[in-house]
Image: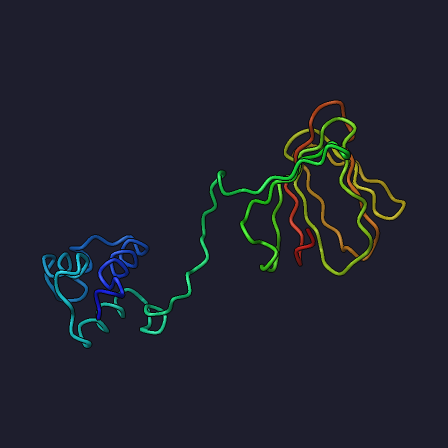
Length: 183
């Protein structure tokens, strides 16, 4: 029954998440390195008190350990980004966090070709932050225009109509974070 749960692999993954060697976990739990190795390879099954001790040393509750719910990743890799190319507005949007629309904020990497822009966004609830990494952009809030250059940032309430334009002759790239997610 326990082997169907892949108990050993779960213990190994949890140990690795905490950056511990088998010897370090063995020392903390007053078990042997060999026993930890056998557990991780599903060659033996721990008693309930031993499993509870191991989980306590790894900062995990039994409910968390046996939950089928996967923890969201902390690190997102470039090959996981979703990219949308908008040829009409001459821009590329990269979602830097998979499924960010279910989170509290949504980080995007926006590239605007010369003459490019984002879609005009009507007033809505939320806030937006950006950091220009390359080139320069023009942020238009209602009728007020703001020139923002590489190395500068912007922050505003979305309670007003807003749009961003490339203000130069080269590609402009900026990190754009909105809360709540709006894309």
